[in-house]
Length: 330
Image (cartoon, rainbow, N blue to C red; front, side, top):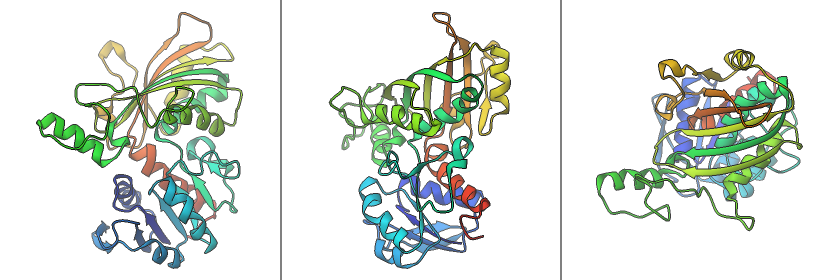
């Protein structure tokens, strides 16, 4: 399969290369592309590839293109790829809320995909781990309301943010990505602030969750916080169900859920942490307990690697799903 990778030299692009190789995705020809790093080298399966410009990648007539180059690049270039017959899986926010584009987490709603889909949106990292954990519970109990607090890694901002954290810890003065120091700090500010006082990241959690779950009636509110962790997002989630639930059944459902690893043994001090989730693909769920302040409500803690399942792995899994369904050539 001819595969173009747009944004090949970025943090997520390089992670996509790693995941493609690990999962043995059937790439016969790789076309790494970028807007600003043309001529650089990337390595895939022990071979060096030279990054080409965007138009060269379009003209390569790839079967599928994985995009991780930002919303502007996606809006400009994805239609040029699809005009040549190349299907696009885009990691940016550009197409997520487009009513004509599918927003997909394969374990949750892969069945919405069809052979005619040319641009498929990869959800926000925090949304992906949230819906993977919630969907099996939603199917059993329904969900009335979600209250979400996220604790998000600096890697979600990009390479420069990771460098800021590393430099602060080393006592090195450097350019600041965040408005404040991030080491030994928490910043309740992910993405830009909107007129309603929420950040774009918080609104993504609200809108994307409803779209993926296929239920506009779910009430969602969120607070997103940047924390001095270099890999892995964590979420405290308060879930109000539409039906009564039983804790043992909740654990049984989650223990069998695709893509979920249940780590919920507080007696032995075992619970999900970014430290253990980093460089893995599962969504880790624990700290399960009934909210004793109101009926039909559960508290849970959700952790996942934001660069893998929250970005690169989910994009590759979409391509794998399309391949299994015959939407991509074998």
